[in-house]
Length: 199
Image (cartoon, rainbow, N blue to C red; front, side, top):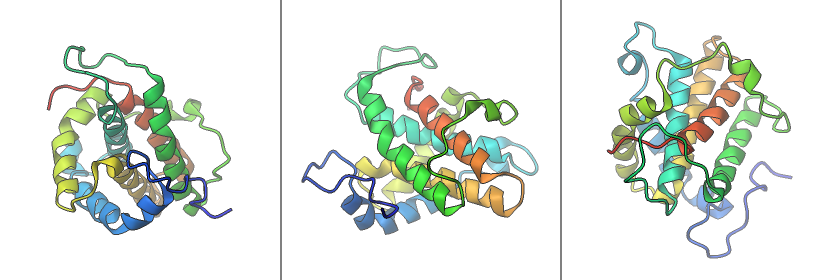
């Protein structure tokens, strides 16, 4: 089975992330994620050397938030920071999880390895999810709009950014990619289930 075979083939449903859609949007996804990467580092965390866990958590939380915003759920009357649950959210997480696993596999992380939040105890971001998304949402929109990427693929662009950050952490020798992947997965869920502050 090829890396992307786990994505459903196109059935002309424009509201579903497909293999063909990923391939057709590959350049735009890469450019949007590269644009978004400029939002991270010392200027984002306010620390001299940056904070790789917070960067990954931030990009992943935006991926989750884009999942949440793609649903038909009216968030306007809900309290920011509160948790929201729903089957539609769960379903829309799946393509993002698969994409993260594919990128992780390219870094040597076994795609069959189960998510383990126990290892995240010592890898916490500096900011809460609602603060991460507030800090990053506008810059993410700007990064994507420059490329004219379809909003359907916004969660993938943010997830790609997160995994590029995982790759950077691996190359610098400061983060095991297995841990980085777990950080990304955890914060996709957190971002998709946390009511954001108004943009």
